[in-house]
Image (cartoon, rainbow, N blue to C red; front, side):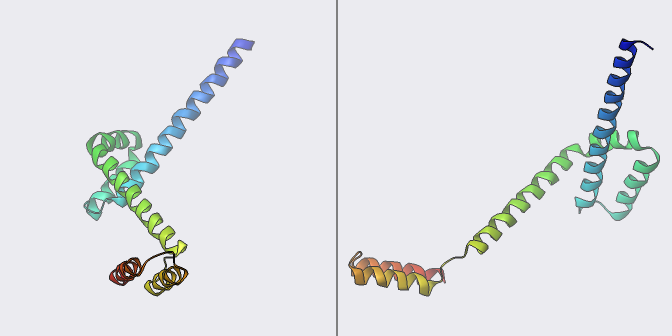
Length: 131
């Protein structure tokens, strides 16, 4: 076996690996989308899964063609929901001053002369309105 035959065999193995890995990524995405779609009935989900088991490549291509737009929309919604939940968690973990803390801070500023009485009343009303 010559040098060039080995090179082509190695390149062919890499090509097969890329195709198999790409197929697995697409398969995982489709299965994830099936379980993410709440409008699709359980029987329809079961039929898609059975099709993916017995005729995997054809079913995968048909699913991507037939439901690709909805798949992208559901994925974007899931990302948006995850980002919203993350932002809410960060805000909660960072802690937010309670109205009494804000009023105490404003009172300390008033006592030090940094703000006027009108500004203190404005900050106090704002803190009480948020509670």
